Length: 394
Ligand SMILES: [Zn+2]
Image (cartoon, rainbow, N blue to C red; front, side):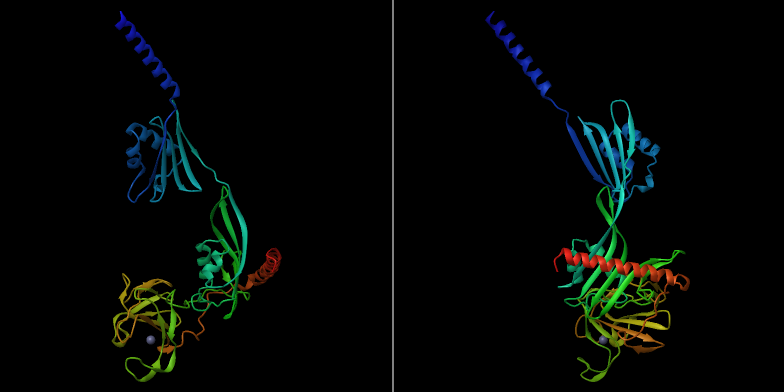
């Protein structure tokens, strides 16, 4: 009797505890995040996380919602949400502008897309160089991307590695795009100016009614030229173009018909213009040399290379800025540097002195329109600069 009684108590007690646990139990949510790799498709990815049958339901749903499977590219992300181990939501992110959602509840599955709110906001920065342009622009709260775009627009005029000085100033008026108030990218650079020891340079982005677009200076001339200022991005010049130089190895005075750029071994060397390779190989004191023929009877030579870039050989076409080789010390050389030569009609000329032809100016019939636009921009920039001076108390 006593035994039966105690058994009942235990059962009752056990039952109670079970009930309590059930009441306390909340749904368990889980989330898996996956980044698409090269060569993968959505089907194989989904099968890693979800049952086959459901995978096809989701794929069908996406297809009906207009999802382009060709868009499934490396770097896209997929987040799968589960509730109590059962699929509840999928988020496919191609970019912040392009997001797909698939939801599933007990009896239906449906797709939703995000329609982003894109906003363009103008920005203006003005500052002074203390160390480098890069540091000075980042100090204004912008990202490296903006610095590169600014430097690229001026790449034919200014070598920002060797020609910037402390106290030089920059001005930049540009558009920034936002997606649902999240920063997306920089849009056009509208107005640029660099006022430095080397000169006062302006850049105005202009698109004529026929769709020709470029950066122009105040006179309406293109900032682009047929040849870049330098074949290296980070370097300094150690020997200039001269008719008499004491050669450190030969120990004699002789002309130096080029520029020597000091740079670490392996630094990338690029072609300063579009052209065709006329020589790529070993040539005496030059060591490993690349010679390129450009338009307007220009030729360039790049000597002492440690090696050539892939595919660089005689007869190959190269683009302005294309990698052709790496800095080395082959041939008659005392240390890693690039010997760079510019020739016109077969004769060496001083790259720092030569006038390189520009890309076309603003078309004659739109020049008046351009000048009006330029003047309104200059007034705007003047006002913005004054406002900024007042707000910073200088
Ligand atoms: Zn040299």
